[in-house]
Picture 1 (cartoon, rainbow, N blue to C red):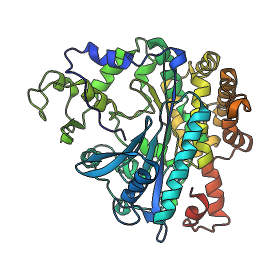
Picture 2 (cartoon, rainbow, N blue to C red):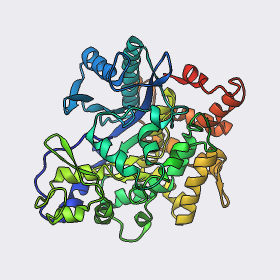
Picture 3 (cartoon, rainbow, N blue to C red):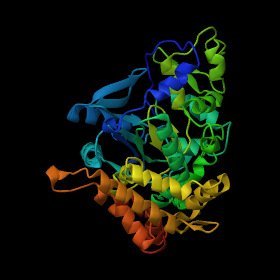
Length: 456
């Protein structure tokens, strides 16, 4: 989850809201790649989730990273809840999932180096405190009662609200992990095109990265249970945003949508003020019950945008949000997949050609089918394996056209980061399929073996 914003003057008129988003426009030369990934930590002896404090804990992890690798601390109410260094930050999801939000970097080579460095650092500290970390889309065994709430005011408010809207909100908060990438756009029209492709083809990412076939200690009937969870969370702030595909879509139209999303909180003086269910429109008029007479600042708007959770979303950049968390070698594949599609004009045109005639039923049908069946999904006459093959070819072509060399020029481009996905296409096997085969085969139904075989 995002670290709260600060600064920015008061919002005096509605136009400032769209201007805030539009300020993200960048020339292609300034486009960057920001990779985010989450992983579950656990104490090795009993394989139970890390509590916040203690010898084997989240606090011990953060302190170890701070002291050994010179990260700067982020605190809330006296509690260490994050770290920052060189444009990157480490933060905590509600159940203690450890997240790296990477710095904005120019190439997949750089972002993958960042990922590898981070995971090696985490591994080193984890070994010292007898902890392990595992990359999955959903916690396979732990119950909700076994999860520990991290000491962040935002999460206390969200936990209460999630229990009142939808059916799966607390599952998302405490027992799921993702890998995401943040990308740039050059103009409003470029944003719209990328946004439409991102939302329409997010089902392909769901299928390729499906990695959550277990929940509550048993097979759950979905290749990506995490994707299923998001469909039962809160209809007001999730989904594939049909309005994005309508005429007139732009920054201002997204503002309309965001203003209609009920608020969670206002952040003031280091504290989260309960504004659950209240209206940012009322806030704009000085009529927010939580802060009577006050009007929002731009940092309040920035915070509000972080409480919206569609399959792709915009702030001053665009986030791709559909993929399950996964094993080490697949973390770099996710940013490579989307960079190949989004950062080359021909690949983006080709991707839009694939999905531009789909209606809402098709987009939603593919999303649901992907969560259930992964690469074996089908909706109507569209077979996911065929669709994913076409999309991956476009991504690979886009990366080749970018021709961003690595290893001092020894590697000509970034296409090799897609190798793990190509293997899935060639075999039809996603991480979820591999896990199910293990569970039904050599593990003989003993799901605890997942920790020994799939931890970092």
